[in-house]
Image 1 (tube, rainbow, N blue to C red):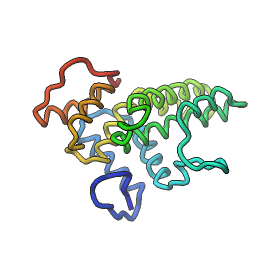
Image 2: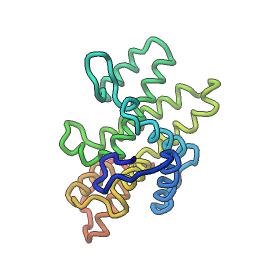
Image 3: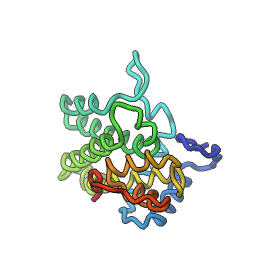
Length: 207
């Protein structure tokens, strides 16, 4: 089954990976965005993996839940090996993309909002791309991580639509807030579809 916080009914599926692949391809086509197929395939695998809560949430024996991104970044800085640092950076990017993509509206009540997740996730993937470049593994993954970094906001928009549907969230104030903080083209289009013309400057634009 697939839910991820959607307000629609739970959808039974037989193969999660196929479901995410076709769904993401449909949204990419509707939004008319350019995303490297290898990066979209990475996101499909990410969603499939995080459909299992034990893959998303951390269990250190005392607490069970999502470790704050700032603490994950501290783990990366204090890592005892390049491999552990790379793992921490990938984990930051993955979690930030998943949360900002599927739970953007819930972030409105948190201490940090979607723009923070986009900033942290994009930077983590960018750093990871630099770290693995020139290594055996980097020959395959460096360009994927770079694409994820550069298209982070684009991918968040894709996942937002996958979560909320083409017509988006009915809360126009929240949609405006997302546009103002992130420069999301999807949020801007949703506002325009509802007759709202944003005034002022938006936040960081996606690449």
